[in-house]
View 1 (spheres, rainbow, N blue to C red):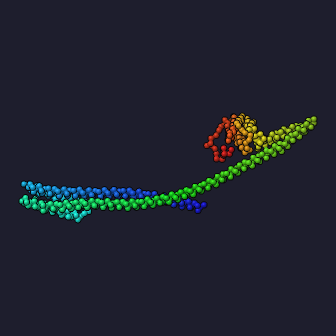
View 2: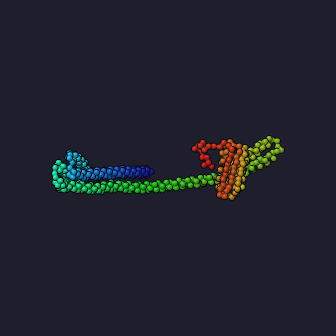
View 3: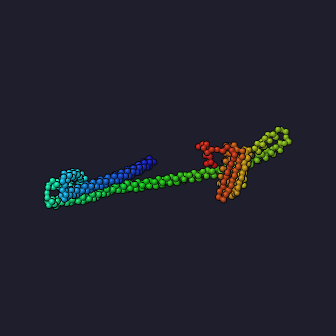
Length: 413
């Protein structure tokens, strides 16, 4: 018994541990899924923001490059009387380009191209500022634009396009790297979920097997209890049968032996009375008392015989036996008892007749002892496949909540 209990405890511990592992893995997988989503969202936002910033800076540098060329061309075509405005505008563009190049250095990964671009911008701005300070002839200005400014501007524009193209390539590489990272994290998450699934299947198999074992054990215990109940019912029925047989035997012995002997004794006393009627020796009075005692004894023995097993039940059937039971109750208690029987057959088995008779007898005894009634009604009705017995009175009644554990109540019937 102790070993079985220890095995059961170990199974419960293993089962609970398995459920704990499954719950832990589910929590870990949930946290991992949340972390993957957060990391992917943050990384994607960061890559996109860097790309947009770099594109904006490149567009601004392209605008400055275009503005320098336009400013210098307009100045050469229509030289301003005050060149300070041109120099001031060129200086402003130079400051802005320097700031944009510095910002671009913080977001781009193409530092070599950026260094070349920075040198080209510085060279273009320096040449432009120098050209603005010179008083050249128109042909010299045109040659300077064609040979110095336009090639440098095209080179800078080409560098800007290369950086933009490299920026696009970096965006693609970053997205691929992010996708690979997410794929790896998703693979780890799938491994954890797969482990969780396997553990769940294992625990489910163990639980189902244990449930089947418990169900089989419960069924076996139920069969044992059912078998014990059947044995008890069989034993109880056998005891009742033996009791009825013993009552029948005692009733017949009382009726056939003792009652007959008492009847003979009464006849002898009557004969003795007739012989002593003409004598005056005082024997007549004791004989009269003896006769009365014999008659009372005969009635008592007959009552005891009828209580043990009424001969009416065996000779005339259930209906007359119940009628005698009702009349005997009325005679004994002074309470009217009325019997109503409907479709009561005389072909009932001895077991059914005995059962109905004893139940009615016990119910009437309870009415006599507890109900304080003024009227009792016994209703017996036989159907095609049923037989109902109802005993009603107008007494005190009872509450099922007041029944003490020592009383069997209806179960006793």
